Length: 342
Image (tube, rainbow, N blue to C red; front, side, top):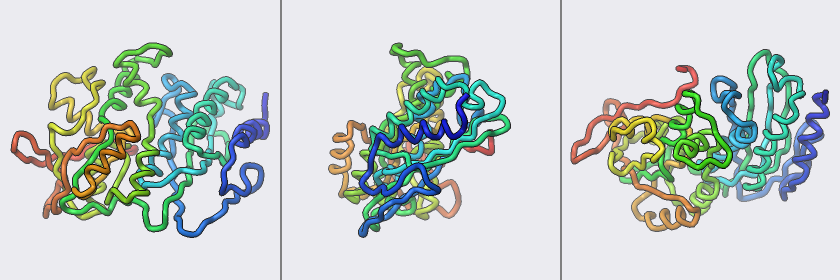
């Protein structure tokens, strides 16, 4: 049986295969040492994934779980318009589990294969973390450190009245995948189908790192957030931080084709898609003058960008979101993922 220190050494050896210009000292001491530079700012984000709350081992392949552990934090850096550079990872491994005591080596080999593959794709270096045991469930704590030009971080609170509201990609595929998983479906290697596409959308999301970085570098967005808790809930957060409201167009919100697996009726499909969460698309607001460059930037990243509405003055009474359909504008209720309401 490998010990805790053998386990850490294996991770350290894998991390050492990558190098970073601003890394002075990585894994191996009490803290990592980073080199600072003038003219830029540091972004730090953290995400906690808890077994049976955020994922289930019965349906999450370890390679996909390692990928997602990093992907959710990369998405946060992208939503700030930054470039990811370093990561830290803490694992709480359950004592009574098939992966306990680090004996289940195949699980951890696959987990880190997924983690390091995504890290390499985005030039991210693992520089530290911790490992311990937990009484029952696996917990994964992911930290990512990134950078942006000084003063250029894209915040949630910058939306302006008259801004267009834009979305990369469709929404609803991940929520469809989760429903299928909970109903017993499982991902299958080599199988191509709408159901498998939905499962992978939930288990192995693609953070929009390149697009987020370019938006930040070019100053194209006034506000931005990633769609992790549902489009309506995340757009409401932009409105709250910006002291504005928003109208979204029923006909312009791209609902993922995978949603058709769980709902054929257009209104129900729309409702499911905008409240599902974990699509990790980027939701942003920008002035009308930036339209062409926004769409060109999205195209250069291989993304479909949609203008789904606009920012309007805040209403005196909630809700902050309204839905426009067929010339009629009505209040839109705000629902999404809530870790305390499971």
